[in-house]
Length: 152
Ligand SMILES: Cc1cc2nc3c(=O)[nH]c(=O)nc-3n(C[C@H](O)[C@H](O)[C@H](O)COP(=O)(O)O)c2cc1C
Image 1 (cartoon, protein in one colour):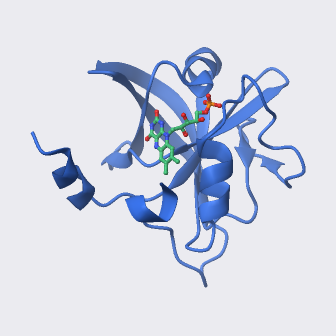
Image 2 (spheres, protein in one colour):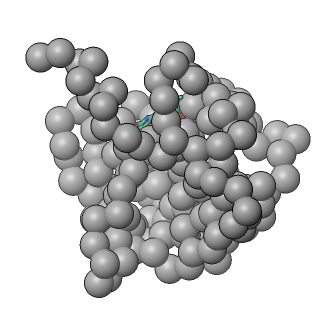
């Protein structure tokens, strides 16, 4: 199988955040999609070794922060290091969604979610969340589209 063909699939770039007690964390994810209209469900595909994986499973909440075109730097900040070792929010402004998950006020939009299901899919886990609150914060900008060359 030619893995390069998968570059043809178009993704956005999201910071998936969560909160467990007083611990907050976020990670970059591009394998994210809407999967139902009624109820409004979204899916984030997250590998088990990620710190976020266990935090979301335990807390039952997550938020999707939709990055803007000029926020590749935020994608890198949350995508290369683990919250097990560093506080990725240090020095950043953030707000709490109703669920308690961090919202980046500079993001294009956010969706606050309640975890409804998890499914094992190969080497990832699909986290299904019901959207409880959603808002476009900067309608004059545009969401970032993932292009491999921009990141790696
Ligand atoms: C552009 C980009 C997209 C990514 N997409 C995903 C993804 O969809 N699922 C995933 O499990 N990891 C993805 N990652 C990797 C995680 O963001 C990375 O392993 C992160 O350090 C995990 O953080 P944590 O251990 O604090 O949860 C992506 C990384 C980048 C740079």
